[in-house]
Length: 337
Image (cartoon, rainbow, N blue to C red; front, side, top):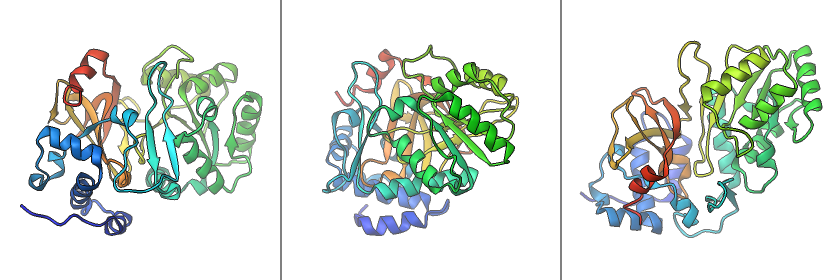
């Protein structure tokens, strides 16, 4: 089978007009483009013995282990990064880096993904509680939150680093004025705020982004949501799933009596592979290693195997259950070593 390697300009035009019907064809062409222009991904495919011309469906596209974002600054083609997003990492671990060819492209993609689930950010007053991210450079989450805050028509929008009192007063004032509020926070900061300032937040969308960042003891998402619901008198808490290595996000909304599932932006699709066989796809609903096809990663690598464990369902939603332990991850990385 032969094919023409598509040009980037053509792919960007198709990405801007992306629909469910055009998704698979574009994913295949982005795969071919990156196989031809991303030296790290091309080498990975070569080591796997993958014949690019024979890949005829997205289900056959190999996923690059996410750890390679810690070793290389991945790029498809030759270009100078406008920015580099850097993960928070863990103690003693090299952080991931994600080269950004066009910062405005990332921001606009994030806006569209959010709007798909919550309406345009310009309709919201965004109150961001992201201390661990604000204290370092290169956070993609901070970049997204800053952009959403700039789009907001409400003067109250902004970041709250070490001023819980100001945040509490702002929340109360917004509720009194019936301003639509999105309280976006990293898990440990939301817990700290809930302990110091429990208050009814009826009508406020409280959205956690995960992560204790070593500040508090780890807890399940269900336990976290239970604490926040009790402190803020809410029926449910929302979640955002994103990472340095992905330009697209997924969101979960409360489902009373049922486990929350993440719904990805249109540019993002989830898959799962067997824990001890990363080349085999897990059946829908079966626990596996979460993998993603992020078409917005057009200039880096769109096909990524994460270090998260979860379930992917037939409707495209997914659950995050935890992280691979060290032994499991070594097994998944044997092809790379």
